[in-house]
Amino acid sequence: MIETPDLIRLLAASGSPVRPLRAPHVRAFGWLAFAAALLVMLAIHHGLRSDLDTQLGRAGFVVSIVASALTGVLAATAAFTVSVPGNSRQWMWLPVPALVVWLWTVSYGCLTHWVSIDPEGIALGTTARCFATMTLASVPLSLVLLVMLRHAAMFRPVLAMTLGSLAVAAISASALSLLHDLDATVLILIWNVGAATAIVAAGAIFGRSYLARLSPSLTSR
Amino acid sequence: MQAPDSLIELGFANPAVAFAPFESMSSKFAFEVLGATSSNGRTSVANHSNDPEEPLVGRPGQRLDWSSLMASGQAGDTDAYRRLLETLTPYLRSLAVRRLGDRSDAEDVVQEILLTVHAIRHTYDPKRPFGPWLIAIASRRIVDRIRKRGRDYRRESALLEDDETFDLSPANLSETALDARTVREAVNRLAPAQREAVRLLKLEEMSLKEAAAASGMSIAALKVACHRGLKALRKRFR
Image (tube, rainbow over all chains, first blue to last red; front, side):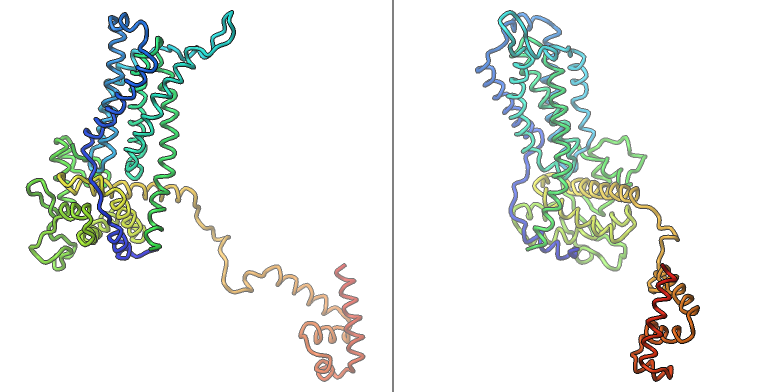
């Protein structure tokens, strides 16, 4: 084992300049701006749902989409906040009220319609198309969030990644509500909970090994 | 909003202020824990040591601003950064010893905290107090170590007396000792000339000349007696 004074000397010698992170809400805003841009691109490519005008007149639809978007915004803010040491973990409760409202409006939607069989043959059902749109929306959002929250691997990986995945799920659900005719919330949640579990597991493994890797790289100098 | 939970995990919580606003609570505890004082939103560390005659930080009356040192460290000032890590270490060690008890474990944790501080030093905002930031990291690493210790204890079991062994070889050669006794008993049952020949040539490993001198038998007689003795032993153990 290296002696602590030697470790300090090595750490100090490798103390290259770093730029302090911006405030969590500023970083959350940056990620949400990216999400909004992605949503706009998807809308341009895919087109908005045909019955959007009618749906916007329905209170249930408006409550659902506002609640999911708000869950996304608040979960992203909470994820960026709890990932910084010194901030309370109580921030994790921030998206909960909006999440409760959102889940209250959930329906099974397109979860059960994977394949359509009709006289013209077997074709991909709405679920498959939902899945494709959801993947297009959530994968870039998850990757960007993962990069932005990578420092949390050393601090609160599980909490930060869980909140981050919730933010991705909520934003993806909002996007799909605007793009697809069916409610994809359950599908999105299942997908994102799975992704969150994988990310958290990877974070738990690689977060520790990152620390372990850092140590020999310093001691071998 | 600042973090009271990390301080609570470390056992520094005062229930009387558990419902105080986060901002004031965390700062207060951080300063208390770290022996720091706050002025103009910055955390400054006063001299603080177990032995008041031996201040850990600078000369008596001198103050060292961890926040400023970290800001300088972030800007690439390696000397300020080294001074910061050096002055943090005694405080981290005392925190770790208090929670873990074991000094060797505590030193490992201190190093892990220093590595984490180094790896995520960019997450510190120089406009905010340094204490809660540091305590949150220290708390995390200490709790990790306590969990690891718990996992290790679950995997291990107490050493039973039966498993104990001794460093002297006879204590660990009970089977060999038993075999040797049986052989000696069998040798004693041989005819006197055969017994003498086997004892001298095989058990005491004498040369034929030495055995002849010791027993008064001729070399040829010794050879024959030894051969017949071994044949009889072989027959007995078959």
